[in-house]
Amino acid sequence: MPAAGQPPCRRCLLSETDPEGLYRQIRTRIELLTDEERTAPEEYAQRLAHCTRCDALRSGLCSICGCFAELRAARREQHCPHEQHFW
Ligand code: SF4
Image (tube, rainbow, N blue to C red; front, side, top):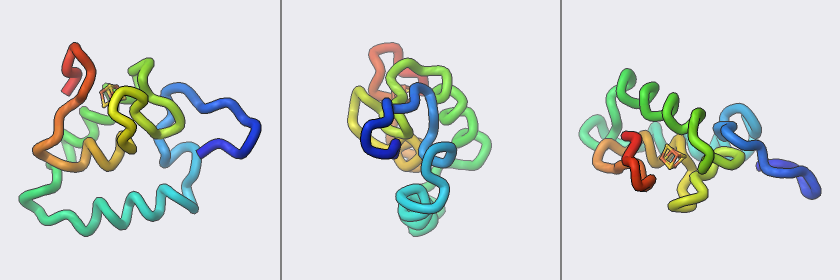
């Protein structure tokens, strides 16, 4: 997350803005998903590619659903909440 007083980073994933703090917790939560729950690596990369081109992404958070984009994309049964359903 951006430091206090800094504007949110548009189209940044959490891995790019907070590699040692909150992102580590998100990575741990992703690693705890079972193989059945977790999105396949290629699909995961495609989902995040959509997020990084999306105006709704703010410092790793999807401003439509409020989820961390990397965690939401990692859950196979989840979908993009945008009206255009990017993934
Ligand atoms: S609307 Fe979809 S593509 Fe955009 S940041 Fe949210 S989850 Fe990602």
